[in-house]
Length: 332
Ligand code: KG4
Ligand code: ZN
Image (cartoon, rainbow, N blue to C red; front, top):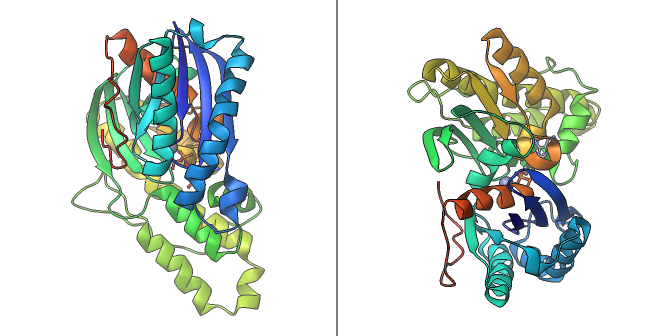
């Protein structure tokens, strides 16, 4: 079955065509980073306007690349939440229009669920697995027992890990989005230069907190002369990153050991981070756990993971009707 996936939850307009839930025939993403970069973060009004301009060319581009027509599709899967409501509505309305015109099944997909399942685009990972979802909007830990069966283990109490990356990058004057910029810069810095505190929530070992590290970096910058810290940016980036990576790796490995699950899967934009991948692998191997990482293009927002998730639900008989609405706060 051919499934068209559509994703417009935040600032990327994406479409993909997937055959039988595993062969990616097309995966097209149009990033709005340049537009939002001017403001140091996503501007919701601009995001929805950009989606409106991009959505039809992106869908046409994906179909053309896949060499298929709308008529040949077996279904359409579209993100219905969580995300920015104005952005979600663009993708959802277009998907409903296509489904109505061509009388094909369509399903609204939970963006978080799609991140948790994205690994299956590239690897055959048996259930269950411990999944760390670390993105710009979320930092969550689940035990994924099957499609549709997600056991919540913990989540962030304040900022998401990607948000901490983006805010610290802004403080350092690096630009937006900050994750990849800090990741690259940190490669030239000393990760032991500054010891930033690692938040650990004693009573809830699988929860995270990233607001403290953000404040610590700000305090460090304020305590220094600007001329002085400007020369230490790679060291600050590397030290900040090391603390974030520790705060992500420790609860994840602990959860896998405690749950007796020997597979860890990473997902979300922050899972593209090179140091996180390296350290998670080291720590997991020491505990005899297997770790799976999606390629960076499937860590960040993409429509292939939406098509994959939709495929599983369509195959299980789920059909959404045209009253389905976008839900900015949708949970799993
Ligand atoms: O999953 P995603 O594309 O969108 C959301 O659903 O949020 O994640 C975007 C987040 C941003 O905060 C970005 O700075 C971060 O992922 N990110 C990274 C890296 N690449 C993207 N963070 C750390 N290292 C990276 N290499
Ligand atoms: Zn995402």
